[in-house]
Every structure is written in structure tokens, then in C-alpha cells.
Length: 114
Length: 110
Image 1 (tube, each protein chain N blue to C red):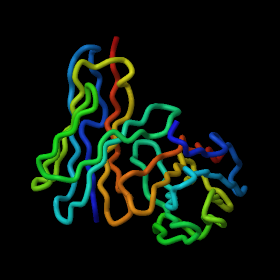
Image 2: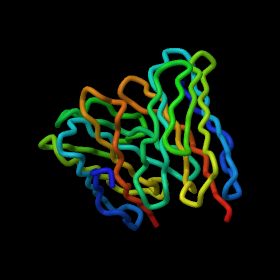
Image 3: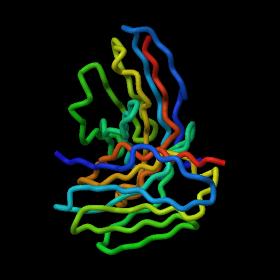
């Protein structure tokens, strides 16, 4: 257990529905990252926060995706109007601001869009 | 475009045998190289962070080497055990982002 938790662990949804995932990082970590991993690929960077500020977004993050970290603690990732191509493992990681080397990962949320 | 390549994609090793696999990455503007172990249904676990050319790190039966000039790293597992079955990911740090390879899926055969 790395101390980073994600909920839910699994989500099955129908195409067109909205889904929201939550990540609770290690409490003293001010950086939080979201990644997506599809079958046969390594995790791909989506976005990251320093405290509550979203500092960078990948071009993979279409306008159907939105991430928030309202109080600089937990974060949510919402996908609107899900598509089958959104089926993936969504990973969250956190790190201390001054040490980007040490990212601690949560167990991920596996999304299946039917 | 930054590309991190890992080979082989999948590997079957007899229990007790030693094995190794490769991660290659662009050598320009190198900052750091990470190795992670990712077991099914668990979080990816950091194994090593390597920054210096010629670096060699060890953790139990697992060790890694780094060549930043030619852009590769090897991960070695000595005397494979069933608990070593996992996907091994390497990644390089670009700014504050980690760029991952596709991983090597290791299966230890009893």
C-alpha cells in the first residue's frame, strides 16, 4: 500500500454516460498526477496539479475530460459522454513538490465502457 | 517526440533462473530514469530512480544499470521467484512529467 487511494477500483458504464473518479493522495504531497493506461501500453500522462492549480494538461485530455483538485487535497477526474475508447486504467500518483522523482501511485480505477 | 522503448514485451522464465531486460530512451537532455514493478491489482511500485551515467543500484535480487550516453538501462533479476511475476515499467522524467515505456511482462514458471 503506497498511501494513495483511488475510488472506485472498477467502473462499468454505458456509452454516453458521465463518470467521476476520485484520488486521495498522500497527505503531505502537494503534487498530484493523472495517467491513463490502455492494453499493451505504458501509462500516459494526462494532467497534474500543484496544490489546487492544474499546471499542465496533455493533448490526450479532450474537452470531455475535466480534473479538479478544489482544496489541494483529493482530486476528481470526470469523463463526460463516455466513449468505448475511454476504456482504460486511470492511475493517480502524488509526490512532494520538490521531489518529482518520487511519485507514489494508487491502484488505479479500471473503466469499462460498454 | 520522446520515445521510451522496452524489450522484450513479454518474457517467460523458469523459477530459479536469472533474467534481464532493457529500457532505451533518448539520451539528449537526460534527467532521470525510473524502474517500476506493477503487479496485477496493485499500485505500481517504485524500484529505482537513476540519474548518473554508470549508476548501478541494487534491491535484494534485483539490480539495474544506467548508460545515459547511449540511452539504455538494464534491469536484472537473479534467481527468479514466483513473486517476481509482474510488469516492469521504465520511465524517464521530462520536466515534471514521467514518460513510460510499454513495459516488460515477466512470467515466472514453477
